[in-house]
Length: 248
Image 1 (tube, helix red, strand yellow):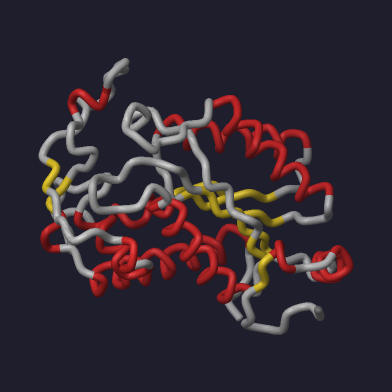
Image 2 (spheres, rainbow, N blue to C red):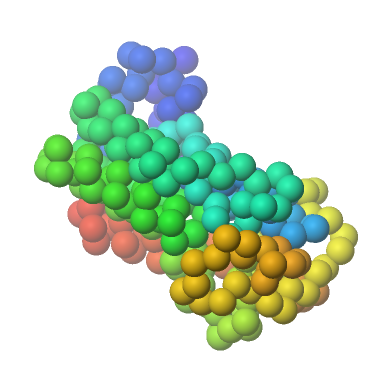
């Protein structure tokens, strides 16, 4: 296999060691997709968060000739932990994964890293940020961005989507309809409750019986593609500004 050409998707998992070494000399941006295995209602797949992050990462990679790392499809999932199918890692494990992966990329000569997670739980995000922070403190040469695509996507709430929308709701259902419509069930549930804000609870699912927040009846693949286009555009702006690199 030869190293990939311009505007061709480069997946680290498909590269040989020699190909990776040659690409590193170009000082590329490296992207780490993170998701979760988590309940998303009766209509969406357990890896909903992973599918979204991986789609955005692939699109961003094409914009910057970046390398996409193999995805991490597990995360820390507190609110949905007691639903069937959710596999939640501890915060310590997530932090350790972030620290080790960022550190190892740095050891391999990578100095620009984007960690993009489709799962945006507060504990999960804090763990990734702490892990990345530890890696940067150890190796100040590293420049690392950590965010969720929902940090951007939720800018559309109260505009293109209702304010009362969230986990597994209209926006998220639309995105999966745009990415993997074959995995979306026919039901369109309406989740009207969510756990009380800022409360630390042993049984959050008690306040979140449907496992989603929002009315999914108006979700569509067209809306989902609009969201993803918005996320990609905003994220490209952030990458160019923060890393000082331009789109190809």
